[in-house]
Length: 527
Image 1 (cartoon, one colour):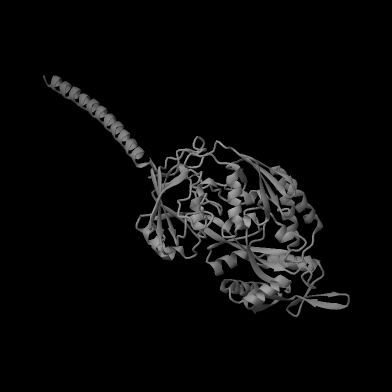
Image 2 (cartoon, rainbow, N blue to C red):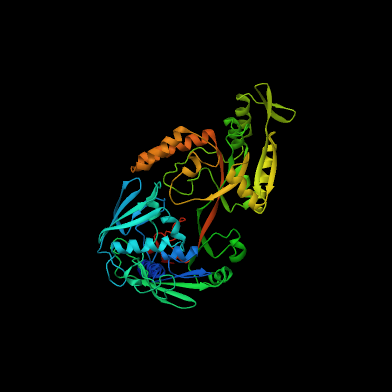
């Protein structure tokens, strides 16, 4: 009797375990399925996107002077050629283009590509746009500065004639195209019409505080790039501070800024950043015809001595990038090499000693033709530019650590411009705004700022004008970079930093460059 009791107990225990196991497995499976369902629900494609612009002027891409307007305008209006993330030219409205002579280009478009009202894009639209740019009221007017005429060969073909050869002129064909017929009978510069484009989105409405864009169902490229975003709301603010506050309150998903003190306005948490190199490029130019600086070893020693990371850290609080070459802003033609970024004092000394310089009486000196030359240099800087003044002081301190005496010549802006134009200096702290084009003639042609002459580079610059093969172009540019690093006619210092700021619930590949901040926008989603 007693044994049967324990037998029943054992059976009940086993049954209980089986029931518990079945329940546990089922519960975990159901919980896992619910969690997967919740994740699926949490990760959703964006139907609407919210952007912000401060100091808005006009949405017309040929008339706006607002950099962020022109950035967003690329979603609405399209150029003949566009630029990818690595600054390589790609076809857009143009289906092909060719350089028919040193001063002429033929461009073809596809008439099946439509304006947002359904009418076809025609050659006359290209001519109309260039004519508007030639009036000189647009940021893009520079792109057509050398254009003398536009010939319409047929409804889909134009011939663009130039007054002189422009290296990589195809990069100039990146201005937005607007429709000719749309503005017949209108004064383009004062028209109140909502401008029309051919892009992924079109303008739905505009008022004092918002611009609403909707997906362009007639877009010619929608089969290749199918955006899930249906609408984009562009919020307009009178000042940048208002935009920052709106972002902090969660009213904006993403924006682009060059503000060096961004964290003072929006803090350090609650958002993510994607940074890219800007186009403001500062460098130290040498007068290569100067008695001292004509010596390659002196320029190379200065390059070895300077700690660029120290300059970026101490002067710009790391809100800039060390620059090693004019094209290192992201161009596919700049191949990374072993660049000098931090100070290499011993290498600097070796270079000087091997060239016959001696360190005596706390100064470097050398005897040539019975004449003693000392490394006493003058650095010219614009006194109205506080940051460059600070950089000049930093350079002076660094060079004097190894015995190169530097006198800073602080001049007014007007005097600075005269000195720069006349090349009346030993060293000068200056800078340029890099173009999208990889053209290097400004830095190396016969009339360059440094009075630097190198026939091999000149030959390469002439050769690349007719080269279209990417790999061959990379080889040619690599050779220019090697010569530059060996002879240092100028020292690349730093370039500005651009920042894309996005809310934490905006996910996907967020990348940008100076041409466009919102590549791959069609793949963004919320989490």
